[in-house]
Figure 1 (cartoon, rainbow, N blue to C red):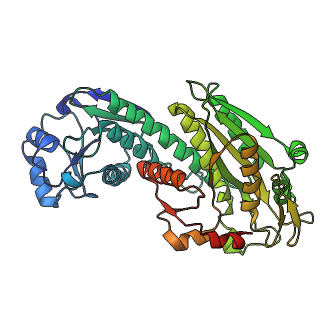
Figure 2 (cartoon, helix red, strand yellow):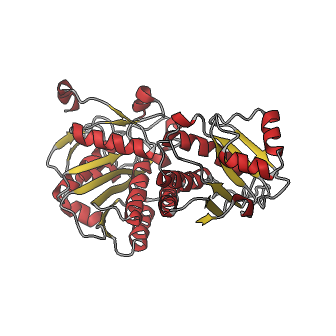
Figure 3 (cartoon, one colour):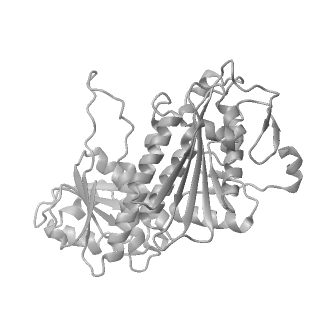
Length: 432
């Protein structure tokens, strides 16, 4: 998808579809007023008939009659100006891009909205447009064939952001950074949606290698294969892997910012179980159906470090992912087995479907041995978290309140919610 910004009068913008945001109390002002004038009053008449008021989630498609080069104009509601925030903008753009997708357009133009008096900056507007245009256009159909009449939906190949004001540099920067974020999200989606037969640990490692190669030297990669895993004492990873015919592999990617390495290194650790059968404590069929996605933490981690490198963020980052399957076999680890982790802690296995915390334990120990003091683990660890916050927020456990608060603030900035779950001292014995 190509992205670009242009400074043009709206009447001169040639496009198949132009998206124009409208505040709830100001439909007769700003861009809508300009388009209404260009259409000889037809737009206001249609809005009146269709009941378009500018509420968040409302859209209206208009075919301009006069003085407009756009074939179609879609108005989308932004709600009241005084309540307009980045979160509201994301909701509005989600509705607008979904409606645009239903029109099967190949290209579209987004008009900059008047942001004066709101809490949204031009950069934030550009970033939201770039990110949500890419994420909303995503579709999981890579495996479908045409033998039963399937036809791929037309993808949006070009998006323009048109501005009528000066100083569009921050707008353009936001647009491109937003697109980088969308690419990362969709890359993680692609990996999570791949069948487990296609995304083996070895194939996941090849994707990690491709990320390093695409980084133009900003990311270095170390792949740790079976013999080295044994020599290093990554016994928790090896125990989980014992029942699989596919060898395990650990990927360690290190990002160094353009300005040079920083003293603090942020660690990202992703659970990368490419298929989780539950091991000898076999999952029921329904619970096993989507376990190809048990590597989603690793997918998000791999996508994140690539986005970090492309954005050139000013902090050193290390990403660690232990890719393995958890399968039942004559060699599989068993309930009652004792595993000696890299940290030197002995763990008695109660249930082989608790494989994620074993592999993560070795990755945390490995990160510590490499000098990482602050790290975030990202995992599809247990469905019990849904009982706390459903699909609205991810469960957040932390032993450092300040670090946790920074993560919550960063999540809010990115539109990702985290539910902090207290680690009371009384729980330590249960954790043992």
